[in-house]
Image (cartoon, rainbow, N blue to C red):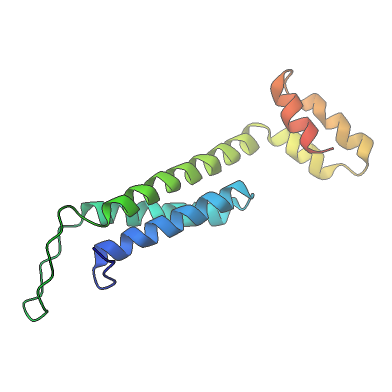
Length: 137
């Protein structure tokens, strides 16, 4: 069955898919606020597309062949998954920035490279220091 742009459930499913994909890309490329907006919209559209009742056929329109299942289900589920991934990345980013706020403040306020490298002391020992500390070099 082809895509019917007049069907609101199919439209929302497509919007969810596109918005979820873009939210995931924006989350990966460090635009968390845009990713948060697109991810939440995709989540809303995907849930509303999945909850929508089947469309009643228009009596004035020509008869269409019946297709089993709902054509928007795959697009809505894909949008739901990508939006969830994008929101997970954004939440992880915000949590990391909140937990290590002292480190990020120190790096932003550093005037020299040496003072910026000394901010590593604010991070805990282990893989976190290696991961976050090497990103600023």
